[in-house]
Image (cartoon, rainbow, N blue to C red):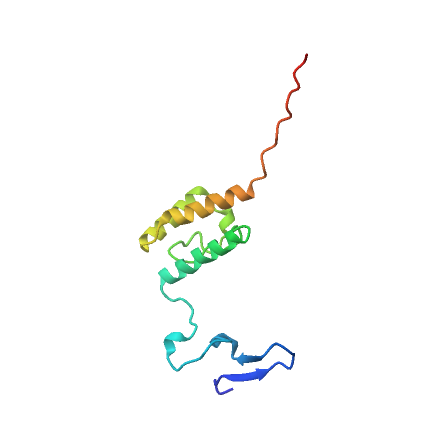
Length: 132
């Protein structure tokens, strides 16, 4: 292929045309300005922001425990699932956030919410019936 964007009709009613290659912003208006193209985040701050966004979206969908920690100044934590981190691990992530000029409390709050969701509800103690 020559790298040009091609529109392909899927042939199914109501689906419209597909844009190829799909990574160039399928369904969006393409311009010659390279700043509008999708590029992977390259700055550590961008990677961190994407990580926090993923935690937020996953948390709203039911739990952030499966989101993997990115390899951004956290060599020992990189690749681990967020739900498996300890309180000390999360404090380390908070320090990373502060180094990027972000609020460290955000990652701690999301982790605490995740831990609450992972715990089973407390058992209710049976009420005693007073003897008469």
